[in-house]
Length: 436
Length: 124
Image 1 (cartoon, rainbow over the protein chains, first blue to last red):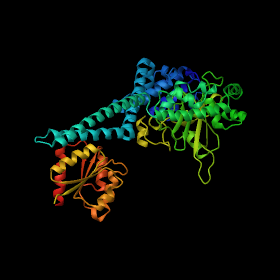
Image 2: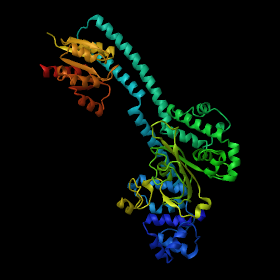
Image 3: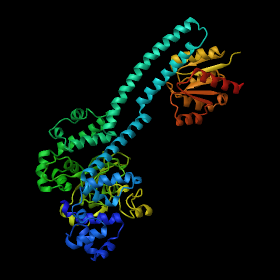
Image 4: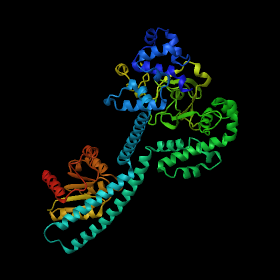
């Protein structure tokens, strides 16, 4: 949807941030609540005096409502603001800030993103220091050697005579220990340098894999050309950490299997007819909807059906694949909204759930979400299946006229009031925090 | 008769240094470097003091200590534990296992001797 058709969304977002009921805004603007509802869902265009009145009531320049700013930028700024509430950022004037000072706004958003990455690196390195067995062994080895050197050197440094045999033995021990210490410290330094570099570039192994897919725009051409999954993973994943490489191999094997069953050229022909409907595509290829969703999400950027987003999670809700859309971000570090049909699908396996979603409080277009959960492996005797869920996201298209379900991205920046799924208070607006 | 110290440690050069220092103090020192046979050795010949490393091949110092504390003959045996890990949780683990004193590597000879003397005095 073009930006200038999102005036209603911006009115709605501004109203929610102010904690104003729809009925109250309608009354003050002297229009019916149902008409305002249509406006807020971008189903009625407004302009002229009504726009000026609404802007005045909402305390913003009319241009802020009509032009807005990039949704992703606003989202990033909002996240930056809620991370540092003590600085007192004027969240209610966020759109105005981004509109008037777009360069500064981008700088702030990029700085916040950089801080996020660095914080993750620190976390990853701290984890490694605490739990890395190689590091623990190396440090133990070094401390034991230092203890031995210190103890032996103390004996030699003490006044008084030592038996020449013992003296020779202790000299030899110090010499051997110093050589061991030199070797173990050199080895530790190399290890920390290599691991630190990997961690600084992208936090967890899954994030390293996510970053690789993102850099390739989620389309791995060598696999679509029939390349062997392990060989392609080895080639493209050279810079990844060992665990990330293992995850990449698994992801590429699945990609290659999907590509073999649903060849790229055939899929590109099919989507001209089926569009981004994963069910229709699955029927054409005699496969399951999850595979069709994965193929749709990994098509080249110029595919005729347009780009779709995809989230895949395991039964515990941890993401194993994430491809966000500009209008539907997927948090990088989990803590996503429990209202997403992705999670509902886990409790209704083998059913395709279809919803029109709107990210609460965001200036974004509605999206359609189709979610499907199925066992992640073959059936086993007397063992419960372990499910995996897929949720594909696409622009709402003709379904944009449906009243969407409000969902959040993550609780901390979600203005949705009285939400039964809320995990922690929102930092947007006092009322919500108090009602948690 | 000299008091007996058993040292269970897997670093040969640390064993030599500690043995030398303790022998010079007039103590009789018996050394072992394998965790798996430690409890059998202790059962066969209980010393006056045990100096025990945490990370040993075969069995950890914590496990050896826990077993000692379950046996009547060694329930009160003074145990000085040596470890390269000195974090709070490592100390807590040692205390829960029933350690008498705990030293973090690298330590000085003087510190170790002081601990040994203190523990010996408590038992005499």
